[in-house]
Image (cartoon, rainbow, N blue to C red; front, side, top):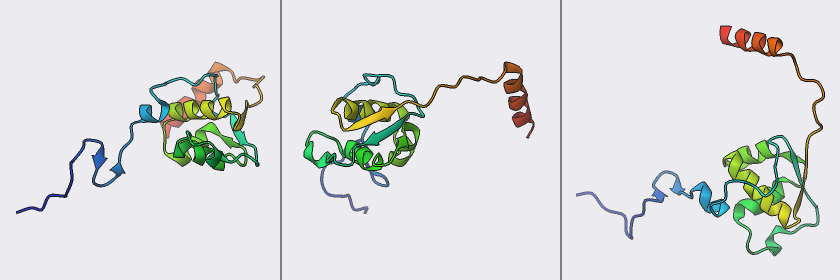
Length: 128
């Protein structure tokens, strides 16, 4: 006879991964940040900001502030936190609205390569 684990079993628990939280739970159901945030925009927290002074912040918010003590791109935050980029954008928007971080957009690209060059690169990559 197989021993059952004590206590109720829920569909949001995973024996291997532990508790599983859906991304929309972290964002409160929001799917877009209040402002447009580029994937390569840099997030920077003020060195004197104490994320523990804000009790309504999720642990992910606090971790973002810690990671953003140095300029860090939104894409890297997503990778470090193992979260979808869309979720990270919403969470960064929360931090921005509270004044805990600043976001610095990358310099605009004035030169875009010709479509033929891009097609040649894609063709070359496919040939590999």
